Amino acid sequence: MSDVVIAALYHFAPLPDFEAMQAPIRAACAEAGVRGTLLLADEGINGTIAGSAAGIDAVLAYLRSDARLSALDEKRSTAPSNPFPRLRVRLKREIVTMGVPGVDPRKRVGSYVEPEAWNSLLEDPDVLVIDTRNEYEVKLGTFRHARSPGTETFREFPAYVERELKGQEHRPIAMFCTGGIRCEKATAYLLDQGFDNVHHLHGGILKYLETVPEAESLWQGECYVFDERVTVTHALTPGDAVQCEACGEPLSAAEQASPQFEADISCPYCIDELTPERRAALEMRRDQRQRARTANG
Image 1 (tube, rainbow, N blue to C red):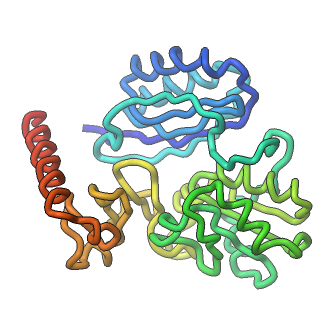
Image 2 (cartoon, rainbow, N blue to C red):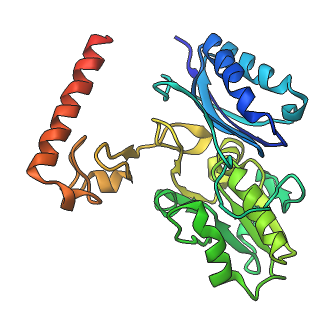
């Protein structure tokens, strides 16, 4: 059986009719046998879908048939099975939520740095390298010399800029994220705030891991992804991390070795909440999932 193709995609474009686009896009995905999550908003489209190569090609061709999405950005990888249990096409206020009105990557963004040139920025001591992802993602892996804002959600990024970056408006700043979309907004926001030397990794970590040979890579750890693979590593192969079924926290191999980790039941982040009643409920849910997997062969 052929590997499943996974396509991470996004594009900022004016879509005032995004609500009307929901049903046709859902139908196109269903017809192609594609699952995953797509977000639609007035500012564009974002998401990750998975299916056969032909199915992914069909959905992307359908999306790009809309002239506003013809320049859709995509990054592909493969997995032995589909990492999404269902298809969701959701309507949102923003395709990546910062919560600051007026930030528009369609007007201007920082300069793009191709993966092949990224290492030179990482090794330049004058460049401030910022990981725009959230702390639960950063803890699993990041670039050497990168600084984490310590955020729990992307909505906290503007406060980080105000608290930590003000006064450095002329310093070279290079930012990165998983697939590139958060940096589109982050660089647009910094430019709006008067920063004038802003760069970001084109295609994000995923493109870097796909493009740069592991022997030359300055990436350390694994890259969190928003599907059942949990993480990927160099060449976009699945990593060793798992997601705690009890609280959703992604867990490194070292955290899985903790005596506080019990598959489907607890981990170091939620062990203090594990009452006898909660354990019973989680064990029941685990048994139900196992029966469902057995029934589905």
